[in-house]
Length: 276
Image 1 (cartoon, helix red, strand yellow):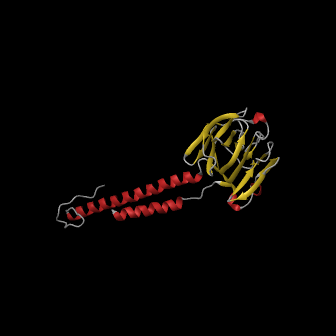
Image 2 (cartoon, helix red, strand yellow):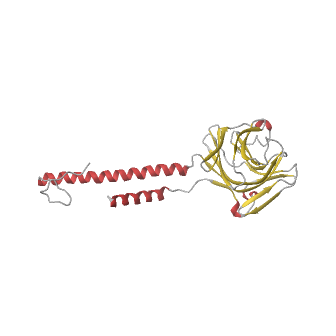
Image 3 (spheres, rainbow, N blue to C red):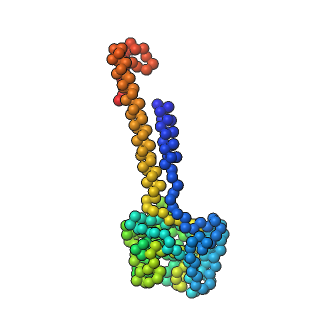
């Protein structure tokens, strides 16, 4: 039995290695490369005084120099199909943030699908938390407290008319996707992504370390599940074949000799056939 267990364990481990395919998540920004988002496919749109610097594997965007400053990074070159499902993952840290009203935030994330529907999220540092912008009036809607002052990895998902924001295993926000298009540009842009300060009523200093996008569910996750089931099924079949072979051998010996063969005992001893 010990031999069989180790053999099947090795088989499953080998199957896992075969099935382990790289994640298909497409990197959109990687601060560890030592370049600004503008060098990695993003457009940078500043209004007023700002600064953007690189340090510690992240870009630091600061719009706190003037009350009319707005600045951020956007792109619209990825097909965001919310019917099939899309996940946007990003790592960010809010160093400082101020806002003049409860409906605005100094750091925002916007994700719109191919139908120009999606969600805009606002991040606060005091009180620390995240909220969704209600549309089309841009009022503070779903919200939660969260330690935005620490570098955190977030996952924003659009699927079947619903958005979900997670950090690790925790669901922070969820609700219906919005249509902000009546406000005009940029909310009339399909497949639109934005990170930064898009209002003159707030300001922030934020570090952005990484951004990536992937389908839902990720093909690698489905492949791992299917491969795992296939390898497990193969192990069960091989075990069943071995037992069937043992039963067949028992029957053959019994027919030819008229006795019941039992491992480790003389043929004349009474014994039981192996279990089927």
